[in-house]
Figure 1 (cartoon, rainbow, N blue to C red):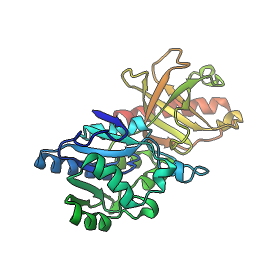
Figure 2 (cartoon, rainbow, N blue to C red):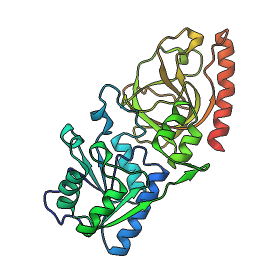
Figure 3 (cartoon, rainbow, N blue to C red):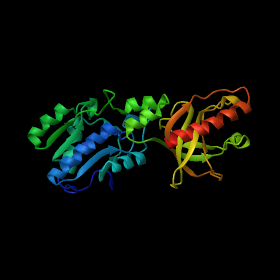
Figure 4 (cartoon, rainbow, N blue to C red):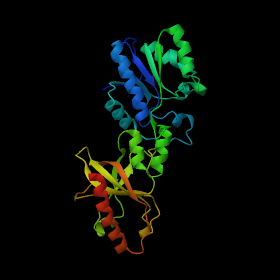
Length: 310
C-alpha cells in the first residue's frame, strides 16, 4: 500500500488519478461502496484509485473543546482502506489554514493542481471546504470547465437506513456491538496497552488484563460484559470476555476496561493488546457477594464461548 504523508511534490505522480476525499472515519460499508466505485472507474480508465484523507478528524481542529469520538485511529483506518483494495492513500494534516479555505481554493490548489484528477467519486451527502460549500453540484459545475468526471455514489442502506459513522458511534456507545460490526463490515476493535489493575480477578479465578486505550478519543462501548477476540502484540487471536464499567460488586468508582483471556496464564503488563468485540452478553451488575459474582462469571464464560464459536 502506497501511503503519502502530504500531497506529492510534483504533478504526474499518479497515473489518470481517480480520487475520493473525506475523513472516512470507520471505513464502513458506505465508504466501501465509494472505494469499490473508484476501483471500477480506475480499472476502466487505466488509472490509479486514490483516497485523500486526514491524519486526524477535522472536527478536532474545528471544535477542539468538544473533539469527536472516533471509530478508527489513523492506523486502523489505513488498514481498513487497504483491505478494500485501495492501494494509494494521501494523508493530509487538517490545519486551521485549511479550514479557512473555501471549496474552490481547496479543490484547485490541493486536488487539481497537485494531483491532476480525471475523475472524482463522492458519497451522496459529501461536502468539503469552508461552510461545506463543496457539494456535488459545485463539483459538477467546476467539472464543465476543468474537464474531470464526477460520480455520486448512493448510500449503502441497512434496515432501510443509510449507513453512517454517526449511527455506528451511537450503536457502540449503547453496547450494540454486533449491529455496529455489521455496519462496519468487520468486528469493532479497540487497541491499547496492558496496565496494572487492582488484581482482584486473579484472586477469584478470573485474571484480567487492564486495558488503557491508545487513543483517548476512540469510542468505548457501553458498560457491560462482552465476548471478544484478543490479539497480543500481533500474535494469533485468543478468545475471552471483557468487562467495561466500575466493578460495582467491589464498590469501584473508576471506569475500567478489563479482559479475561481464556486459557492464558502470562504476564501481560506493558504489552500491546487489541480486542475485537463480538457480542454483548449482559449489563454490568452489582452482586450481593463475590461468590455470586464468580458463579455469574462462570456462566458468562460459557455464553461467551458459544458466541465466539457460533
